[in-house]
Length: 279
Ligand code: SIN
Ligand code: MN
Image (cartoon, rainbow, N blue to C red; front, side, top):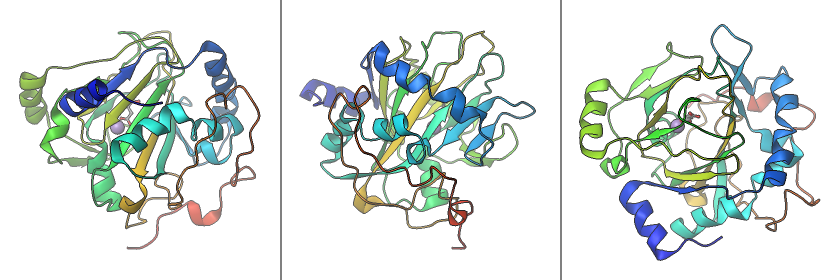
């Protein structure tokens, strides 16, 4: 999938692009059929919400789930990022966020590159998030909120918050958010399952809790230019990958047809991928 010049300019201006209903319902059905099985597993890749069995995020399913291994190589998700960077990409992070009905907790205001720089020593913000909705996203089930234009400010000061939720995050303080929102406002792309968002790794974003009766499952590919690979392996490999081999895209119909994909962790996570390494 190729971006138009107008889309590239829009991305540079606001820091994200929204593609409503980019994937068909049959394609989304294939992915959704797999999520309950993944979330039911007791493996370290499933991070649960504080005080609840609900899965907050599932990591690295592209290494042990056939449909998600194909999604990780989907040209509609990968090619636009290759086009923007003019480079080959590897998978820095792959996650399926639950934001489950009633239990889905907040994601505080943050920039992803803040974490990738601080924790993983990724040299430049040449890594992109591409999200795909597996459920309809509306104003009630915790849509992602972006501050348009905030990606242009580079890496902002952040504090490591290890207590608000079950997942540690480098978060931005409320005074800064107030100023940023004054100039940029807030955008929250909403739409049917199958919609896709591509967003800059310095774009400030957050989402509130999900008190609605509707799940808001979404998959996030974090695609990094190969030569911009992380330099420190402090976090476990299932969170920050260490395989920098370029991704090879599958054909556009890959979710609905059979293709060979590697599933190296299908029998379990290798022990060396479970912990970080000393710097
Ligand atoms: C994230 O920022 O990584 C996730 C936010 C969300 O899923 O709402
Ligand atoms: Mn994020």
